[in-house]
Structure formats: structure tokens, C-alpha cells
Amino acid sequence: MSKIKLMSEDLANKIAAGEVVERCMNVVKELVENAIDAKSTCIKIDLIESGVKEIVVTDDGVGMDKEDATMAFSRHATSKLKTLEDLFNIDSLGFRGEALPSIASVSHVILKTSNGEVGTEVIINGGVIESINNSDLKKGTKITVRDLFYNTPVRLKYLKNLYIELSNIVDYVNKMALSYPNIKFVLTNNGKELLNTDGQNNLLKVIYNIYGFDVSKKMIKVEGENKDYKINGYVSYPEITRSSRNVITTLVNGRVIRNNDLIKTILEAYHTYIPDGKYPIVVLNVEVDPYLIDINIHPTKMDIKFSEFSGLKELINKSITKELERLALIPSAKPLEKSNELKKDETGNISFKDIIDNYIENKNDQVSEETKEYNSVEEITLDFEGNNIELPFEDDKKTRIKKMYPVGLVHGTYIIAENEDGMYMIDQHAANERINYEKYLKAMGTHDNKMIDLLIPIKIELSNSDYIILKENFNLLKELNFEIEEFGINTILIRSHPFWLPINHIEESIRKIIEIIISKESFDSYKFTEKVSITLACKMSIKANDHISLEQMEYLLDTLRETENPFTCPHGRPTIISYSKYELEKLFKRAMN
Ligand code: ZN
Ligand code: ZN
Image (tube, rainbow, N blue to C red; front, side, top):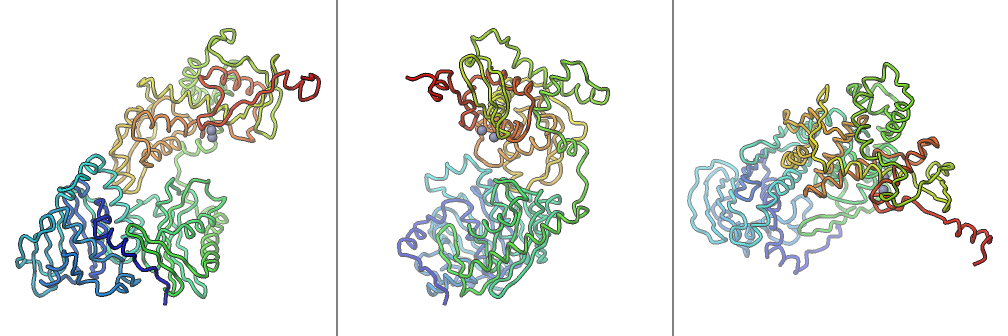
């Protein structure tokens, strides 16, 4: 027998109290899982106003007879659950039917169902059965849940952030579609289709429906097996990553399980292929004898413990690395279809360095013919750069540090500098980050509508749930002076960008900005611009082991002195550590007290 933790009484009460039904997503989840349990091959979810106004789930499953239909919504007669063991049966989806009474108590419900013989219609308002009639439905079940939470104070909470509510539902339905490629899922909101899979049991096609063409063509099939485990699924090329681990979907025996050990193992296989904080798109199913797992069920999530995990770990690692290595060996396997602009981006060096180089070059009047066009665009950045830095060094009122003269670089990271007061160690990345951060923050705050048109518009394809969030926040991008338009399914087209965008990293920066929006953290416009500034600043700054010349160091230090807060980077780390002349003398016992 598998070791299974039984549901505590407290937990059961919480479910009964409706804790499970605190979001629209929980209602959709309950109804969809009932439809799956009813052996449906097609499940349609239609929402109005993200489900707050109305949720309709229609399936073609086995349906219920009149007695079951009447009982389904009463708390003390869970006809579907005979025993507790039933509840934890690995084949069922958990709290079957348990949440229906809770849903009915906070909404208006119309249930139409038919087992193929009789059709029944039950109408319930606020948990009270109003009527039971015959229905014309031929087969399956259609549940309509209206005005969710109408009789509770939480309702208002949901009306504020409808699109977050919606994106959670889309995320959930996506995962269900990935776990059941043999079931057709259709999801709409206010009549607009958000997902439509074909139910033909083709996982890659479902991935395409969710993440779009650009992603689906860069997925690799993985499979493998050992004595205890069998795995199969798809993993993305290392170049296809996202900032949220939510894009890693792990299934155990066909059921979505969020398990940290599994995610960690997958990420280990990608180690050195993708940067920290980035996640590959993965759908991985693990098949295992239920005896080897220990399931722990909470009302809102489900976790699992594997015995013999080391065997599973090795299997996953081997199967994924094998494919990634193959990819690295055969360069032609990587489709070469990036635009020229992107290539230029990738070969381009660190922006600040470029700017300094250009600055110095321009001063020396040595701009070659070929680079003229490039520089004419760059000048815009330099103009701005000029405004920012023009303060004469003598005017020390504004600077908080005296001029420092660089002497050299230590460990490719720390600039050593001196002046008559003492010695300084400057973290070149942190210093550059501070400069860039203030630069971006200022540029975004000016509301100057200088825009740069793109020769070739940049196309960005997103997953359906990310697209919802982005679309809802187009204004954030527009305020920053991006010219954007919708372009086909879950795709946007960027036509112009604000002048301050780092010229060699246009697409990359746009993607970063979009990621910040999608992270759902910073919708208030100030926090948003701050986050964008920090992210771009970090990205565009000199890294450790970027060797810059003494002249460039001097420029960097001079610019740092002009910043509002030269002492820390935007993440709060120190930029400068100083030793006064006196401190040095003390350290060397030249000064005795
Ligand atoms: Zn950084
Ligand atoms: Zn930093």
C-alpha cells in the first residue's frame, strides 16, 4: 500500500467552509476536474469577466441521473465519495464533488446534466435549491455559475484585478490541457477564445496552442526509463527561457504535481546552458508505480515524495543532457532565422563600453565611414549622455566625492584609484550600474517623446496567459514611448521604442521590460520604471572580467561622482570602499595612534 496521509478533520472543515473556493480559479478547477472524472473528451470553459460574472463549464462526459444531480450540491450527501479511500485514489483528481456545495452557497448555479437517458436541470441560489426540472440536454453536464461571491465581501477584491484572476485560470487550464492532450479543451473569456486544443493526444500540438509557434518548433522530445521509472515529454532549447518557473510543468502518472525536487533536477540538467533565474519550458511526465510514491494533499496544492528518488534523478538528468549535448554538437540543428538586427545585438559589446569608446573616438574625430550610420543613431544616446555628465569637475557643489585617479584593476573587477585623501576600491559593475540606473530613471521620468522607429518591427510572441497580462498593461509600455500593436494570436509588434533603449540590445531590453510586466509585481508606474531601470542598468553595465582601459576607468569614476548617490548600486551593494591616507598609515604603523 502506498503511504497516504489522511485528511485531518480540520482540513475537511476548511474545505466545507469554502476555503477551497476563494478564487474563481478554484471554481473552474473543481468543475473541470469533475468533468475529467466524468470521462469527458471535450471540456469547454466559457467565462464572462474572468469568471466573476459567469463561469460555464460544458462537457460530454457520463453525466448524472436526477438523484445524483439533486444530491451533488448538498454538503452531507456526497454521493460521489463513498469512502475516504475513494478520495485519495490516484485515479481521481482529489476533492471531487467536495467543493460543489461551497460554490453553490456563494453564487447562482444552474446545473444541466444527462446520463443519456433522462436530462435534469437544477437551479440553486445561494445554496438553496429553487427548482428541479427535466432538461433537454442529451448527454454530459453543463454547469453555469453566476455572480460568484455575490453574497460575500470578498467579491470586490476580485473586481479590481480581473486580468490576474483570468491569467491564473488560463495557467490552470493550460496545465490541464498539457496533462490531458487526449481531451479537447476550449477556453473563452467574454467570447474571445484563449485556448483551443484538438484532443488528438498530441502533446507538442498542445504546447503550440499554449506557447505559440516560435516555442513549439524549439522543443525537444525526451524519453527514458529505468527499473522504477519511465519519463517522457518535451523540453525547450536552452535559448527558449522564461523568468517564471511556472513554465516547468511536471506530471506524475498524468497528474500535475508541483515538486521542488523534480524542478531542481530538471534545472540541474540545464546547468551552464541557461543563466540563473531563467527557466526552460518543460512538460515532463513521470510514470511510476503508486507504491513508490507518498502523496500529501492540501486543499490548494498537492505534493509528492518519491522513494528511490536518486534513480529518477539520474534518469531525468541523463535523458535531458543527452538531448542538450546532441543539440550542441550539431549546430545546423539550430534554425538560423534570427534577423540581422538581433545578430548585431549579440555581437555587440557592453553598451557602456561602447558609449565610452564612441565618446573617445568622437573626441578624436576618427569615425570611419562604415560606422557613420551606426553613430548617427548612437549620437542620440550621446546627446543625452552629455546632458547628464556636462558638469565641470571644478564645480564640486554637486559631487560628493573628490576626483579619483585610477591606478589599475584587481581580479578583473575592482578598480584601484587614488587621490590626495587616500585610496579607493571601486566595484566596476556596481559603479556602472549606479550610473546607468540613474540615467534610465531620469530618461523615463522626462516623458520626452523622442522615439526611434525600427526599420524592421520586432515581433514578440507570448504564451496566452502572459499575453493577457501584457495586454492589460499596454499603457505601461505606451507611457515609456513604445509604439506597439497587436499582431495575430498572442503576438505584439513593436514599431518604435524610446530613445534611451540601449542601441545594441533593443530586442533583449524589450523582452526584459515585458518580463517585468508579466512578473505581475510592479504595476504601479513608479515601481515599474524603477524596476525597469534596475534591470536594464544591471544588464548594460560592465561585468567582472571586462577589462577596460585606464582612460575608460577615469571616465567611469568621473561619471560616478556626478550621480545622486555614488555610494551604492541600485541593489544596495557598496560601489566604493575607501582607505584614507591616515588609515593606510595606521595599517602600516607609520602613524602610531
Ligand atoms: Zn548587477
Ligand atoms: Zn547591483
